[in-house]
Length: 118
Image (cartoon, rainbow, N blue to C red; front, side, top):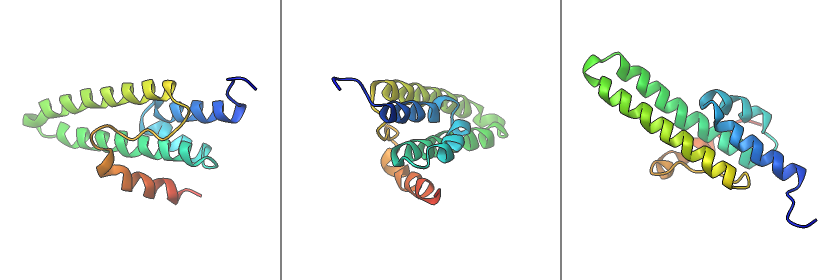
């Protein structure tokens, strides 16, 4: 066996990374594709909550001209989160990747979404 990951472990890692690759869009897809693995499902739900939430906030702020700079900063924050999730995903084994700084506040919503998909 050596240090080689199993096929199931490698799929788990791949699916967890792919759940973040296109933000909330692939999050929704892998919420259902990875429904048999709780960690993949959790990462997909995390992607939906983090990137879906950022997308909604950025969209709303985009309608208010004076708040456009905040919208631009949130876009940068989204890119940073995306990079962090991909780097941690590549370095990890498919484990759950909570969002830095906001994880403690949003994890309850991530858990609810992940547990709602059967």
